[in-house]
View 1 (cartoon, rainbow, N blue to C red):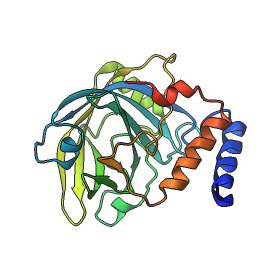
View 2: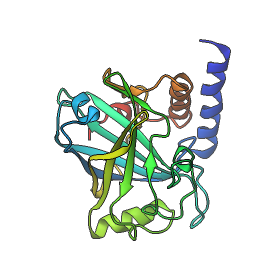
View 3: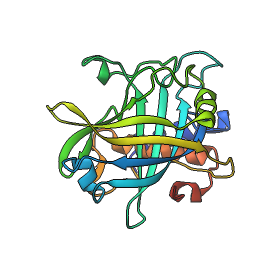
View 4: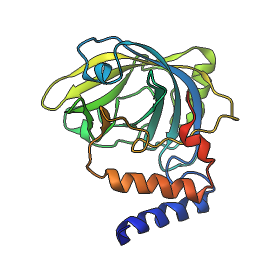
Length: 233
């Protein structure tokens, strides 16, 4: 392993040990969810074996872990399973609303106030694709803390439109993500979009090596249960 890669593991491991939590996105809420793909022309649906609904698990969290009520970089981590049981993890982050700012991370003051994307593209069926989420009910889950999502979902499911944007093309809806209920705290999940990827849908190579080692260091630093990396929804 090259020296810079070792330092990434050490850095994120040290931060996780200091926090006694994930190095980034240290505090979050885990939710049972379902993801449905409805667009038959979608590259993503094709890569996942077709349209239909699948169970999922989602974690909403603040990236930096700012104090209560303070805006932060908001994240939505999604895990779903393919027909053969293989797992797929996709991580979304809050970005700007406009064409230029959609490429930038933007602090959020509410979970349904703006869009989310994978920021970096995925390679889906050999094409570069940016995946995204658009809140269906802008007035819900207001406030930047994950507890706002917990409280909203406790009252009624919370929906997001799942979008796909091919390189040079327009963003279009291809399905939905619905946060259905709060998961039990006894269900640990460690998300890793690099290790839990698939040959036909995976993050582009840009920074993927650094990301893999950052997640590895974070898991080691907090002594994460190894089974949580492979926990099915």
